[in-house]
Image (cartoon, rainbow, N blue to C red; front, side, top):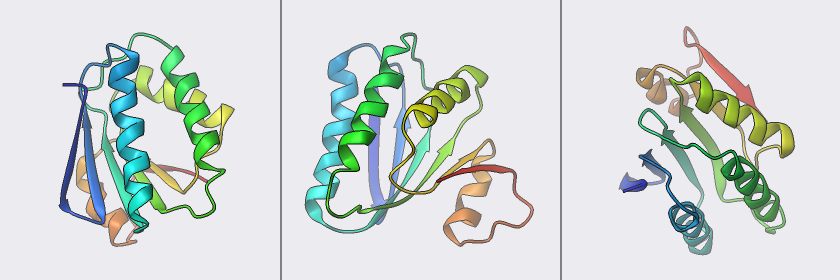
Amino acid sequence: MFVKFNYDNFPNVYVTFGKLNSNEDFNILTNEWLRLYEQKIPFTFIFDSSNLEVYNIKYSFKMSAFIYRLKKEPIQYLEKSIIIVNNSFIQSLLDLIFFIQSPVAPVYIIKDPNSVQKILDNNLNDIDYKYII
């Protein structure tokens, strides 16, 4: 399975990734994201890319185009994203995405999963993160 959504701590939505094999896999992610917007309730994404496998750069361009589309929405329900990244290739793909298209909400890129709660609590002291708005 490419992507799994966990709503146990909503409005914090935990998203874990596996191997991205196809456009259909990618569409599962974007369709669920749009479904969250349809609910009209603010939320935060916590993306765990620790097990993400992606071998085609086209998905970076597809994600940039999706973000561009989201920016046309009258209200942005995504309040922030926290992305756990422990792979330099995945970090490079993220850099490309955000170079092409800035995010719809602030993004915190971290290596240490233990930093997630500190960011959720807005306690940014003593954690290593990259911030993109």
